[in-house]
Length: 161
Image (cartoon, rainbow, N blue to C red):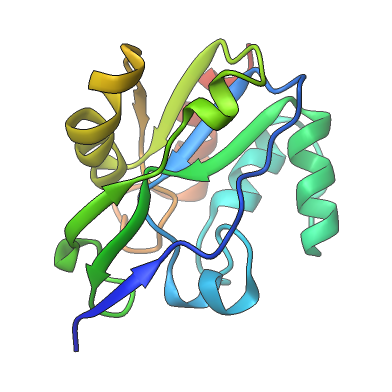
């Protein structure tokens, strides 16, 4: 069943954020727990922790502290959409988030998107407004079975500025 859903999770950033990582839209599990990459099978936290040689953060507080300590801002491209469950392929009627909230508050040097769906919506809705291209990294979603954790970590190391 397709449902109109509004993004319930505020962005994580501060005045020192230099890296902006954007997903497409939070999964059902992320919306339930109220934080990014909340599905236990999503490899985002394992990958970024390995990139920065840190322990994998477990709690929301640990995850926020990890992001800010490493000068990372996290949000999603989409503010609201019609979606079936967590299926990126079902996304319709998109309204984009206003990234200027972050870009005007922090010295973001690079914008990365977590996967091709995020890239598609970023290029369609956001890039024309920001004038800034995003670098597409392979999705950390378990649906991206072609990339194991080791390959993801190698590719994601490019976020280290």
